[in-house]
Image 1 (cartoon, helix red, strand yellow):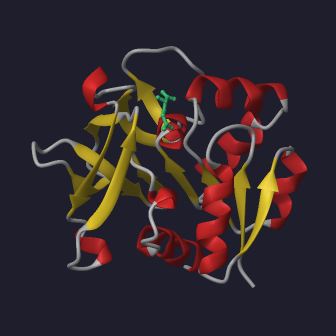
Image 2: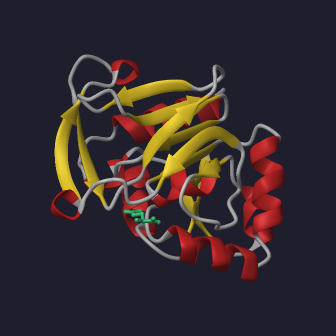
Length: 191
Ligand code: GLN
């Protein structure tokens, strides 16, 4: 049976566990490198990317995460998790797993719109738009040709993408009751 790890250092990890449990999948809280030995994929939750990065370094997880991401291990990063998977961050110097060929900007929405919800067309999830919740969210500024953009804001800004084993969203699918984004990740894991 599929078992998904959820990086549980800081942030919205409990909500991801609930979404996956609703899909009938077993989850494991990941806090130490050896926890990663028994899972088939990893979710990196939203939270504060600077804090998650620092804790991952302190707990000796960063090196293992980098190796796994580069070797085809499925990872799904939401919001701060997207930042942690990005190879480039335009406005900060935090250490990231850095496996995905995207450049991101943290906190890309102004103060008034720090948080908002919008209905986004995401063709790989089907015809019904997805309820996307953005909380002090980043945006994807640049991708290369091996990155597939899965969703854009009405102004064209990419906010969800996939590059082989790596999946990211700038919004929080775990905070909505729509389970299609998590199901899409499980599909990547099962291949
Ligand atoms: N603003 C946070 C950061 O830069 C991300 C916010 C979130 O994950 N909801 O890390």
